[in-house]
Amino acid sequence: MRLSDIGGEFGFIDHIRATFAAAKVNGLVVPLGDDAAVLDVPPDRQVVVTTDGLIEGVHFRRDWSDPYSIGWKAAAVNLSDIAAMGADPTFTFVSLALPSDETVEWLERLYDGLCDCLNRYGARLAGGDTNSTSSGLVITVTQLGTVPRGQALTRVGAKVGDILLVTGTLGDSAAGLALLSQHGAVQAEKVNKGVVQSHRRPQPRVVAARAARETGHVHAAMDISDGLAGDLPKLCTASGVGAKINAAALPLSEAVQSAAKELSLPVLDLALDGGECCELLLAVAPSDVEAVQAAVAATGTVLTPIGEVLRTGFRILGPDGADLPTERRGWDHFAP
Ligand code: ADP
Ligand code: MG
Image 1 (cartoon, rainbow, N blue to C red):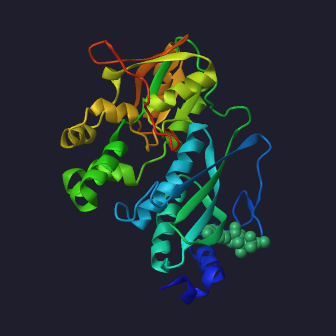
Image 2: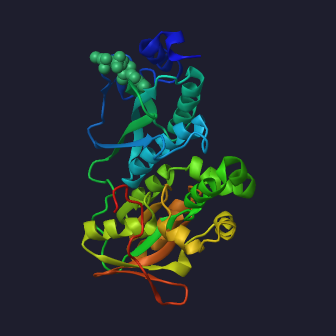
Image 3: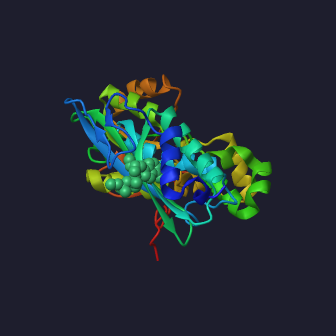
């Protein structure tokens, strides 16, 4: 079914409103359907806002991903940024640029994935924008959240001597992407479905981040969506410190270790450089590490020490203790 069969843009928006949008709930005074949404914020909380888009051909390919997963991922990458601030997701706005031949069925699956991910982490669809485009599909999500006043986790605040910790395991999503680009979807799934799923449906660390924030012990935090080795220097710059990573300590899943063999790539390259994941990086004083680990473990997420904060410089120590190169790691759209 084409969009024109359900009344074009306005028919489509009506359909989205009836099927996916939040009703008038706590915090949402005027829901999707008016010129703009009206939100209430409790006086003791602050609003946290982020936006991130996925562009066909740049961030996703229809032959590598299904529409449900593309919608899921558009939500997940935004929820990950909200999590990285220690905030609770609230309302979501979705801006679409649609090729003229887009089908209603495909878009419904996109919204299914998007809203399943949003709803799982406590967010609700509250509005958006719909346009047409003569090139590929663009889906831009704006995600709001709230955090107790003054308690947002930021990249600023890491202190010399702090321990650096990461959630989950590293490199899975990057390995999935590499397998998809080498083999295409059918073969990649046969070889290693686990890492392919990590790439398609990342799990934002909303619950783990809230638990970490509530300990009051997190000095700095960020999500490592551009890869640990690319993102850690950003946290260091923001905090005015240096850092050291112990490569031998990086948490690796069995799936990424076998994927690295299948790809003939060093697993450390995947773990250090691989982005596109929703894992979080935290800086915590040594005396508080156990408490933060316990709080996060209670939410079902492992938090692994991987290095420490130095006064200056950025070092990656290999498994044999020798320095590994640190240049040109991480994903940059505009890198030469
Ligand atoms: P306007 O022309 O006044 O900007 P629209 O007709 O674009 O209004 O949108 C009407 C309502 O539908 C608004 O509440 C808007 O937030 C919502 N909306 C529009 N497009 C989308 C979309 N793709 N997803 C979710 N909500 C949407
Ligand atoms: Mg209007």
